[in-house]
Length: 88
Image (cartoon, rainbow, N blue to C red; front, side):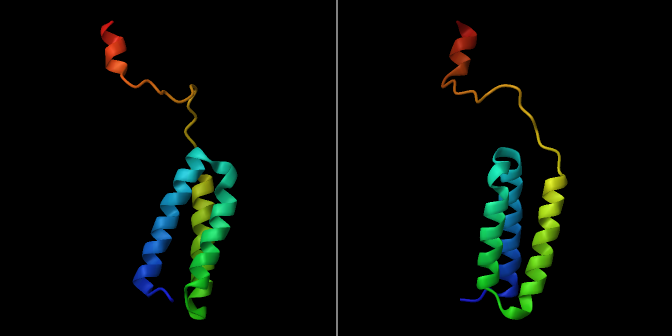
């Protein structure tokens, strides 16, 4: 099944969102996920679109890598009922 131009743009936008999340939370798997999804996009598109996909994907990856990452000092907060602790 080949993606239409609209479906391809939608998938590229989804990939951008996924990469942004991974950049923040799991940067160690960013490259692998990127390569997998770009390969998938290419395999589901016509040969005329391959160059566009590669160019767009490389620009997207460079832009996302350049973004600053939020660094949280503490670990996750797993309190189930934090409002109850505040009252006590």
